[in-house]
Length: 357
Image 1 (cartoon, helix red, strand yellow):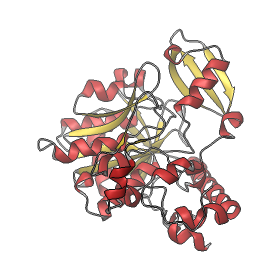
Image 2 (tube, one colour):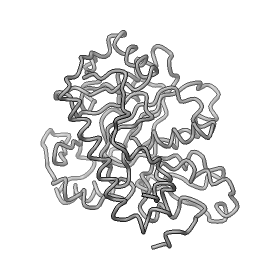
Image 3 (cartoon, rainbow, N blue to C red):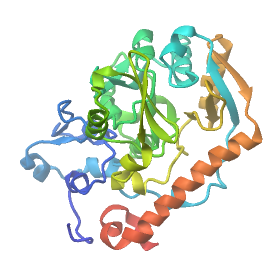
Image 4 (spheres, helix red, strand yellow):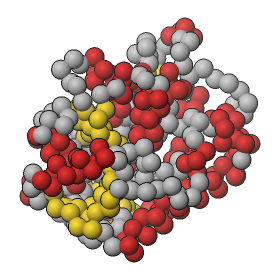
């Protein structure tokens, strides 16, 4: 364990301590391309020669990392959350519904925004047949539909921002990500990095935590399954695997949740306050998605999907949104408890102003 007060010059130490949610931001901004994604080890960044890091004085990797210097106000009870609108939504496209995790709202919104030229492309989370994460930058409707469905593993989607930054044909994009990824985008935007300059729409996904691909592979091994057998994963108090043959297998969620990374334990966001829209299953009927519209950009995107006949929405009941708020407050509380317990070890090293708590 490193000394708590030590100041380090790149993200490698926080990665070693488990404070990496593998958002991909550091890969995107590293001026030496010294941080990379190795699909054979798909749960952490690959750090190259230390000589490159020694030469670097920019420390961009640390500045964009969403797990370093998390703002204090994200740990407070969410009285500030004032959505423009809250809906239950469901795709009206059967092809989307077949691939979607719940209501297919994310996919329908992306398709509508592409068709209306609101965006030129989107960054989404794909996977290979072994369920290893595959970040995807695309303007293909088929690729967006194929990427539908929750992966529950760390996906370094933001690494694709490097490609966006140098692609002159792409003028505007949407990014779909969990709250830590949207938090990294906010940091990039405040720094006025070109990597975030083309992001026109940020879609946040409800998130309690993620798992490493190796954890999922180990569980499947215990269940006598292979990753290539799995068609779908769900979390409904248990981790549920549906095979390509249609049978289901369950695994106790509390067992896998005992080994969460500190990165997920310290994260206070169930939804992202920086997103234009937040979408997830909590608070909506089965087969529907909860859509929390946070900004006018988000409102425009949802309206595009509704007006094009791709998405149907209905007003969510107050008691259903209270359930969402329960999850929001629960995650904040757990993050505060984490720091109360581990502040001496990790606080000054990782979180900047929050170490004063």
